[in-house]
Length: 113
Image (cartoon, rainbow, N blue to C red; front, side, top):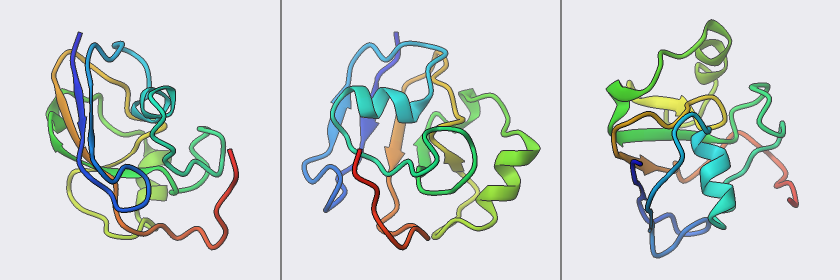
């Protein structure tokens, strides 16, 4: 099983984290939440917002292509890059991933999950 390396984020994951044996076919967001990385996810993983936006620094090409719905939402994400994905939609594949959580989101109020 692949591993996910989450780069340090001052609020969500200050020390960074390595998640060994991430299950294939599970969304990056779900894996991070299951490992106590409290990434924002205002729409409850339903591809209706951009709060779980991540930048896939390594392993991007191993992910299935984004859907049109995901692409449309990504256009509104803060700090968009060519390797941006909504972590609720990008599912872990066979390759290791390195993930950067952007410093900001367009969410004006943080949800308590």
